[in-house]
Length: 179
Image 1 (cartoon, helix red, strand yellow):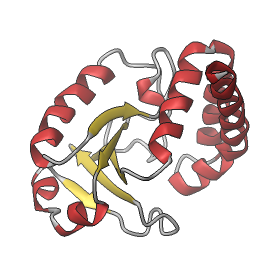
Image 2 (cartoon, one colour):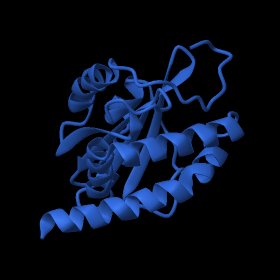
Image 3 (cartoon, one colour):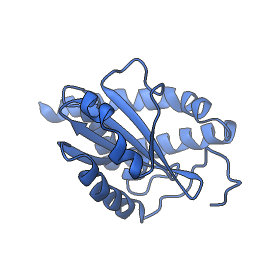
Image 4 (cartoon, one colour):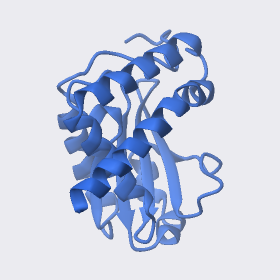
C-alpha cells in the first residue's frame, strides 16, 4: 500500500490483522491500566472479510473522563484524539493512529455503561457466523469505496443502509440465541 493510495481502500482479508491487533492490545494494556477489556472489532476482526486495512479496537473503561484527562500515554503511542467524531455520544472517545503516513488504527474508548461494546461484539459474531451476511456487508463496502475513495465520511454514509439492515438482523439473531 503506497502513500498515494486513497483514504478509503477496501482490501482482501489479511491474516496478519489479528496479530497486529494483539501487538497493539499489549501496548494499550500498559497505556490504559484501568481498561476492563480491549477487543478487536470492525471488519478486520472478521476472518475472511475484505476491509479497510485499519484495525478497529474497542476499549471499555470505568470512566471515559479519566481517559480524556490522561491522554498522554495514548499520545506517546501515536494516538490522536478526534473529539468531533462522535459528538452525540459523550461516552465514546475516538482516537486515530497513523503508521508510515497511513491510517492504521481506530481506537474506540467506551464507558462501562455504554451499550455500544455489546452491539459491536454482536455484529462481529453475526458476520463471523453468517457468511451470507458478511458477503453482503463486503459488497456494500466495495460499492461505497468505489463511489467515495477520497472521503471516509461519504464512504461510511454510502454503506450505512446495509450496515443498519445487518445490525437489525444481528440483534434479532442475538435475541433468538438468548431465548
